[in-house]
Length: 436
Picture 1 (cartoon, rainbow, N blue to C red):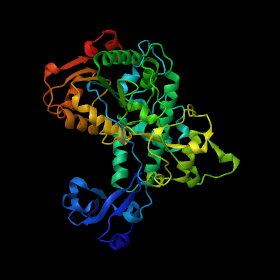
Picture 2: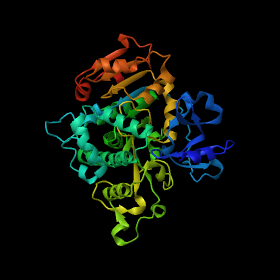
Picture 3: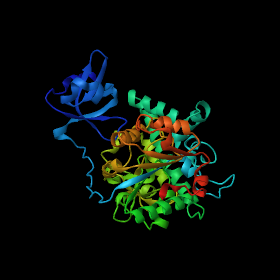
Picture 4: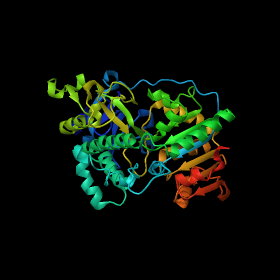
């Protein structure tokens, strides 16, 4: 948006403003804040509190705008769900430390899921060159940073506070790289008969069935190792995105706030106008990532091409060299690992279900999670702040985890904590009474 376009905006209309780095538009008015020498997008009735409710932008960050009455963007339709008739008193939260120790028979050199800090390190970078934007950033990541999350936090801050489309294109490439990496890892690690996930699912299922309760699983990992355990032990299916929160198929509800390597938003390739000759009639996942990167597509442009909300990608898409029809191409739905994650990448119906079951939680089991996800901590605070919760934490950083919960659960005392510092496998071996 230019300054002359800004001054031509009608004072009586609400607009949809498409920021170059976001898939969905922001709604409201755009006004100049003289005292701050900036612009803000905010709803008309909230403009006096723009610091709280508005989004600060530069004009060049606004890639497109249109009056809401003429808006081409169609928000995804959300499915409403019947809320469960049972309460959930126990919740299990999984972080990267859980998948990294998913097997109790793991030996040195085994190909196990990486911790966040290792995503761009050997041996996981075999396919990195297939994603040129991610490959470009990898050089800087390896040379200059000790924390991958802090690095991506800094990159995201740059694209959200400044106009940097080249960096945004590289971050999209990273999404494709990470999705591809964890699809491959999930395939390599599947079929293990020494999975700790199998044991925790069995314990949770037996407890829930015996007590007539629900158990909540919250998984911040992108891989499919917990899905595999639920399929094998609890006979769950994940044919659709709704399966994760279908309490009628069992007493275990499953939430992935940061998305998953098997989640995507399908793209209408007819609208995208992919070349129709035989060379492009069939794309692999990697080829499509290349195509988008070469075309320099930005998130706001995708909103026009999405067919639907987040969904399970086709079961045909398993490995990076399996060709799929172009009608099955998609944008991965997972959150790049920022330090202070303040977003969710899951369907609105999942969030509604999570909000409905959280208030009854009395005990939490944490496995390999640091507790730094600010938006999820806000959910815990909103629903459980006034309750005395007991937490069992399977983690090496006990003081770090305690600190993460200090604000969200202020009533917790030293006696409400139990720690297992040796990891997932040792926790399983000790037969902790959490599910008794």
